[in-house]
Every structure is written in C-alpha cells, then in structure tokens.
Length: 508
Image (cartoon, rainbow, N blue to C red; front, side, top):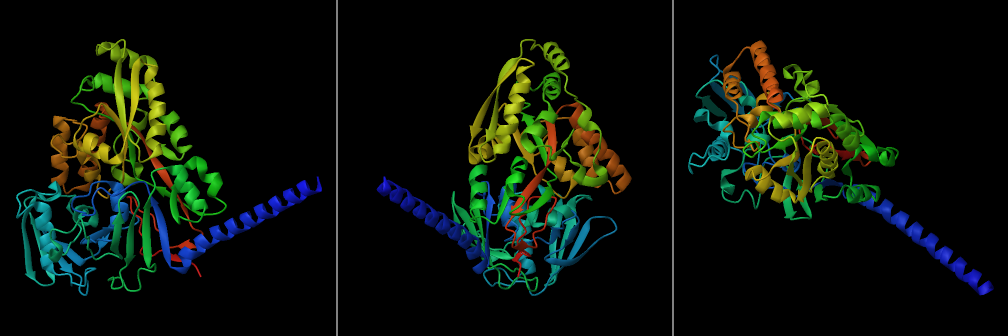
C-alpha cells in the first residue's frame, strides 16, 4: 500500500511539473512574439488572389491592404484621404481629376514610384493593352495623362459621383510596371509591409517595409496571417498564446474578456439569404416575399450573434449615414400564414424542395442556415444545407451562379453606389441574377447627379425597390468582436474589412 501511495505521489509531482512546463511554454509563446516584434493574425481562409487587381474576396483585402496603396485611402470614419496622391482637384464640370503624386515613395523592390507605374496600373485595370478589362469601375475613363513626373490626370466620359471611392487600394492598387506578369506570384506594392511568403492552407507572411513613406511606421517587424477555418481552433490558439488577433463569436466573449483586449467593430456588413432568380421558383416575387415572411430575423440574430447585430431590410446598413433608409427592416415581419398564402398564390401550396449552398470558411453561415431551414419548414419549404469549400463557393456559386439559395455577408465599402451596384442587371457580380428596369435607370442617374439631396432621394428609392422586390432576405449588420493580445496597442477599426497593422505595436 505504501508503494502505491508513493506511486501516486510520483504521478502527482510529474503532473505538477507538466502543468508548470505547459504554463511556462504558453507564456513563452506570447512573449516570444513580442521579443521578435511580430504578430500572428487569424484569417478564416486563403486569399483568392495575391494580385489585388484580380482579388474579389473581402478576406483577401484584410491582408493585402497592408501590402498595397492607392491614390487615396479610406479612413476609420469612411472618409477619403490622400495616400500616394498627396493632393487632388476636380474640374468644375466633374470630368477631370488632377492628382499630385507624393514624392520619395519606393516600391518594396526598391524601385521609385513614378507616374508611369500609376498609368500602367490603370491601363491594366482598364484592359487598354489586352482588350480585357479587369474591372468595370473604370469603363467611364476617357483618357489618362501624365503631363509631368509629379502629375497624373484622369478624364471621365461623364461625371461619376462615386469615382473617388474607386481610387483606394480596394479597387485600384498601384503596382510597379517592372513586375508585370508576376503580381500574383511575387506581389510588390508600396504599403507598410512587404510580401515574404505564401503557403497555401497555412499562412501568408509579411515583413516590415523599412522604406515606408509614412515616417516611423510600421512598428512591427513581421506579420503572419494564419489560415484557420475552424472558430474553435482559432479560439484555442488565441488562449494558448499562438495568435495575437482573433475574431471571436459573441457567445464566447465571457471566455476571453478577462484575458484579452476586446474591440467591437461595426462591420458595415449585410448578411443575407440570396436566391438565384434565374431558377424556378425564385423568379416569382411572391415566392421571394414568402421566404422573407418565413425567416425570423430575430432568431437569426440571437442564434448567430447573441444580439450583437442590427436588423436590416435592404442591402445597406446604418453605417452608410444619411443615405441609409430606416424602417425597411420591418417590411416583412414574420408571418407564417402570409408566407403560406403567397406560396399558394404562386402555385406552391405544398411548398417545394431546395438547397442552401454555403461556404465552410465561417461557422456563421452554418448557424444561420440551421435557423433558416427550420423557419422554412413551417411554410412547407424543405431546404437541404450543402456545405462547400470557400474556393468552390467562389467558383460555383459566386462566379458560376450555379445554386438555388445561399447565405453570405457582403462586407462594407466606402461608396453607397458600390454597396448596391451588384443588383444592376448587367453587373458582373450580380450573382442573384436580379433584374429591374427602374433600379437600373436610377443607378445610372445617381452616378451623374451632383445634388446631395437628390442623391439621397434616389438611394432611398433604390433600397425600397430591393425591399419590395424581395431581392434577398436581408438579415443583419453584425458586430465583429476582435480579441487582441493585451500587450498590443494601435489597432484601428474601419467600416470595411482591413487588418491595419501599420500602427500596431507592443506596449512598453
């Protein structure tokens, strides 16, 4: 018996040693990053492209905006401020934009920034040489001119009230002409951090730009974006000191609020259930309206966000300021009988079977889909959830428009026009296949309208059309809760997805 107790004592001692070593190891992980002056940021999935002119996924720009600059940059309040253009002026007729280019800026490869690089970047986006534009944002450009080595001039065919918002790195990153043909393999920009390596399904590593044009920045020597699709794994990595910045679900806040600094970001996002309106039965507005009446937005907000969200009624959030039309969120108050009546009127009294195709890269979509499926059952619609990889979703659902229903969140952009441009009939990103003549006409009108009051009227009507036509089930604009290493400071929040690490540093 004494031997047995000695054995237990030995086991106990070994366990204490193991716990002590583990605790030391965890502390060393956190301290190690600080000693090396670097951070590790969790990202849900791989970038779709490293070439910013090809990229479409918002998670890609969370990372890439640290590498690239545009002529302008969006500030934390959504306003635009100078970046590679230190100044600009617009002609009285709204057609000519003249930019004074910032001096002393170099690319990560050491090449100086020139007006030729800027013209090259816009020519590439416009497809001037290839005949294949990479973006439709610049179809309205009549000419590009470089009258001297400090001046770049863009002349439009007609006025465009949204044009300045296209001039950030989100839409028109400035690339070095010398890197032509290699932008996706060896990305080079002028941003705070330079590309080091990309390891698919693992990480993207960036190094400090020692010659960044903002004096004294950045503070960090290295940034690693680690791809972790699973939220639980990410949370454990944060708690173990292996991650420094992680988005946590609202229901996990009690687990992290005492150990980490929490930042609550109003995401300016639009979470929605979208339908492919070229497929039956979603061509029928009554079916789309029935689904709107069937889905309980309050249940979705509670289940997915623990209440940290704002209910929406169109593809615009309150973050867009005075062009946001309030009140539409209550257009389709949950009404099961009304939903059944609309379905019967459309010829689907017994409901129908359908599939909700969602990406696996965020648990959010599964959580929402489960609520939606149960809601739809009550009106006779049997929906099966199909979970696919993010790359498959982008290729098949977003680009190929091969789906019935999907759930996605559109992240914030700086322009109200760009926020709802995807519903224009011939828009390349209109994967809903939504088409409405009045909508298209008003979207054309708002671009050339210079009166802010009239612009607001038009944006109100555009949101009303999306609601009336039930272009999607608009669910919520949700808060993103970031848990940060408590030794970090300088992390800023934007009304669009951007991990701005240029001013992040460890406290003394």
